[in-house]
Length: 626
Image 1 (cartoon, rainbow, N blue to C red):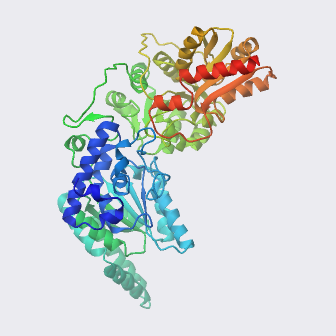
Image 2 (cartoon, rainbow, N blue to C red):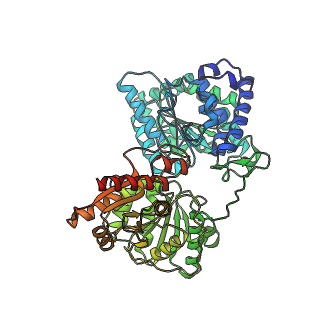
């Protein structure tokens, strides 16, 4: 690594010439590929913005100038250039570097990100703050074309254009098809027209035309229409001009000389600017270029073969079980439709989309729209299944409440990645859904302990005549299989093992850890009753109350924050029934955001594995005895 090993901050970057920067780009790509092949991560998007990242840090002065990365999928080159090269091998590992932008990790990470479409809003807020504080620095939002499917981006563009503040938005476009000739002409014009002299001349000429008595304003409007018509002919920038942004591009995002020149020009301007940059996802690593979707978020892989390292575990994931079961149910029920928010692969709906293309809807990164879209379908007699990761469903909370629950519409929320997710960290753990959904009137919430229950619960959800949330974890099941799918009685829990010493009430994946804890405690002479509660709402009050009266030493276990979660529901029930003679310990996530690490490491850290449950049981029995 001839040049990368000399880069300890963006200041070192500015010492290199264009040729040296090109070599540096190759070194960065090589480092990213080698690291991600071991740690897993977001490969294709990070490879696609290497030159853009170099150019941004070469022209601007981070951290004084703020570079805001939307989502953060593309931040690996940024981390390597901002003093984290020596720790890059710890990417996404427990106590290592985050796979996303994390404000507490580096002063160069100006705004934490992990969810889509937030960069322009955050950047505009920073720009306005700079104005109020008389701070003279630049704010640059880097947003991908995928994130531009989120409405939040356009809300921010609308206000930014109205305020006419000094903000730069870079649209990293790796999907639009733009012909080489048009791209070359537009790139040339944008580099030339972005020069400050020409921009000032354009502005002053406009003022001059307006000042001419009687006919001046009409002449200005004609000139403006002519300019806009010309721009529309050669670029796709008219949309952004409508938001009062000065549009430049599209420019090739892998030409460092072009990027540096236009960014240097744009840096001198003080109006809302949108620079349209076209890049290739996976650039520099052929397997990722050919299959960017596969290498968007990938586990460890063989670099030479370009394939994931095979696991000896053939048990399907919960996601795969969900997708397969939904296809089976849709064969017999034409009213079933599937909806996802730009995640057909991640939510297991690829096979459904192939088999029933007319009944599959990908709404883009627009969870709010997706939920209300589903409500509209449900209002007309269809059975929409909305498959969204738990962490992303948070973005549609009001739509669940207002558009689905108030009218009790039969929408099924298939909530993937519920609970501890792993290496993606705080922005991606599904640790809040039980709490943020439990307060909504009429919404049923359930969670399976294994694949059999997932199938049965999905079947139950389809036949239920109201809103229902089915929450399941990331990862593989237990290897359970069943041919016959059966309905589950709404609100009914199931006693799995009986013992007189302690009562363990669990929900979802935690039931498996509770069973393992029961076996360990049994060896130590401690007998437990383990209940698979299955439903957070409605809770099986009758069963729980009857068991507490016999076994007043209780542990609740959930992969959710303790505030307002499953354990809280149990406590509320006991209080409402005036039951006070009991000892209880709620196991779950305390009032904190959980960082990244493997699911195993994080469950152990928060005492949510069998070992933690055993320890809790013994301590609780000791307290009760005393």
